[in-house]
Image (cartoon, each protein chain N blue to C red):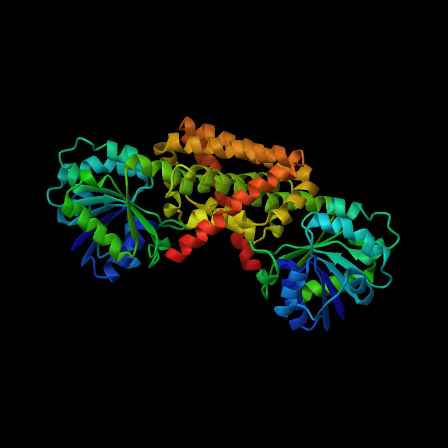
Length: 285
Length: 285
């Protein structure tokens, strides 16, 4: 099978490594937005050859969009205009608007919206690593609107990546990821911002940064190029979660200010439940 | 040397393991708040024997307070009332009120306020692990108010624990840890609370929890018994940091709502600076 990957970043590159190594793809073609990026992908042996978008569409059995989500939206219609038997999927972190943009496209059924819940805080082709997806969850959206053979091909790809596949409507997907992914990134960005602001006056503040701090701000290293388009696409859900988060923080702040230890204890013990949930998830995977 | 550790939790237990194994202490005596805890500490061979607080004070060269900080405040005066040549230190995460509580004590100079910036999200004697402190930072506060031999003994303990020692006033310490430790815990507790609230209606939300989410909520597993006393002791600083954090979140939320991508990019790129700072710290340690 021939696979074209559009986007030579962390996700596109990591995908290329595993699909080739595990025999899912005989040939991996890469489309990038700069010569530098595609050359790097070639040098790192992530892909077999660099192609133009049109070549990549024409020659592939499977086309995978792994660009920032604003680029995906601008490319998806263009790609569907040009496919016949090929299958198209994407790795985007927000789905509703992307899917809506091709709702009435005559080739809509060749497209399988998907989202592998995997990543690191690093970006670009040199951030690509093997086994990135192993044991994580992949979401396939609105599969009733795709051809069966297309769903099968994309499901097989995620099987090869050793991911647990779950199915979900695009709208529901966007609500869920706002809670378990998008909000974590915002909380990290703003935590880093708040401490860096303070650091301007307190030079050695980071001498004290412990493991706890490091793990909470890890995601603050994530790239603006990937995340701003996600904020633009999933605005309503993200704003809703942020409003809850800010409300809960404000309430906790007031409880601390007036030393209401009983209420503080109740909230912390409720938050502690996260342990059982994550431990159960870990054991399952 | 004989060391008495008061508090048989993660910190007290981990301290006991390394001080014994690395030859700093010949005998480790343990004081716990329940029979169950001290028996567990004995069973796990963390300590050589269980003593009462009075025995522990009388027989030790060094007395280490490793209890929740509200317990420390209630015990420190009692302990200083009973020491002569012994040295007393503590592992508390907030310092100003603790130090103030013994400001005019005739034996104040036998006490060295300290804070090893190390820990995990687990608690109790069975959470104790070797090498917990290696390469981390320990803060010694207000050393001008302690006897030289006392500072030397405590510094030597942290050397044996392979920690980088820095010196700081108690007041300044409390400001710094509000930014690089306390706020991280609050942000995690509330993130967990917010997502768990949502989960009541959306059963399978955690199927999607990725590595990013897991690392951001890790600290939400931390115990109320340890953290509420810290919030009570460092209230003013924590409320100040939380107010900045909430203000910055609200601003970011508004920028997302009105798709102000230029401002969003500026904040994210500023937050990305955390990468250089943490990488530099990592290389140093």
